[in-house]
Image 1 (cartoon, rainbow, N blue to C red):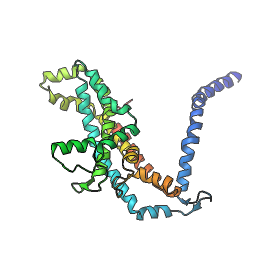
Image 2 (cartoon, rainbow, N blue to C red):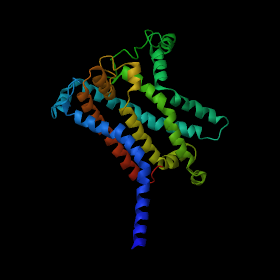
Image 3 (tube, rainbow, N blue to C red):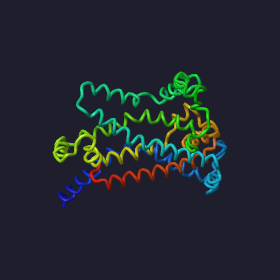
Image 4 (spheres, helix red, strand yellow):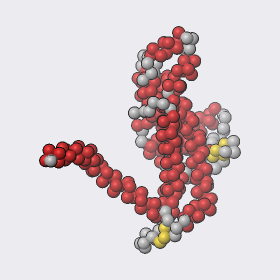
Length: 308
């Protein structure tokens, strides 16, 4: 009986040991992530404009206000345009760069470093630098004036006008910075995938007549599908949560033409001090990101081999 009890105790210890190692991290996450998230969920059903008073329960009042809020729908439209404009470029272009720098050429490591350099630059520094480039007398407008294409320059960050009647110029200018920053990061992900493809696969394909660009269509893209799905979802989530670029370069203007949903959340919370309404916007944003995360899991499961 004592041996059985001792054996059971050892089994219990073995099962509890991993959870004891996880306990400090779970406590930290509970205090800094899970509990604030639950509080934000509760506040989205309350009115909490006066932080000196306790929140008042109003049920779905904030959601009805959100439904009638034209600025919210504008920010949602801008976020969708950001998603549609940025993601395809960040999925396709880094793959081409990865194929380029995966060649066995002299000095290719310098090209890899050059493409990756924007990733390590702080977004604050990058945003300020690009804001100078976009200025009325900035380098880009001076170049356009010198060439004679646009003698008066382009109001990159100060015009609500739309390109082809769809994409505001100010929003497109901010999107360019996001793409410039992200190309190197996603290139490295693709480069890791390319280097995991055995060379004999390409050699066998060359014997069958698949060489040059055709080998990438026949071999590279099918084998890189899990990485393509990963980059697509990661870039989509990042585009949905974009904030720093907008805050530094345009602050949502002009006329809300570059205001995204995260910036609108920040504006409501810290400029208008409407905490409950900001929590409601945050809940909608959480549901959007949750949907994208579920999409990622679905694509990974249907894509065959999972990524580690």
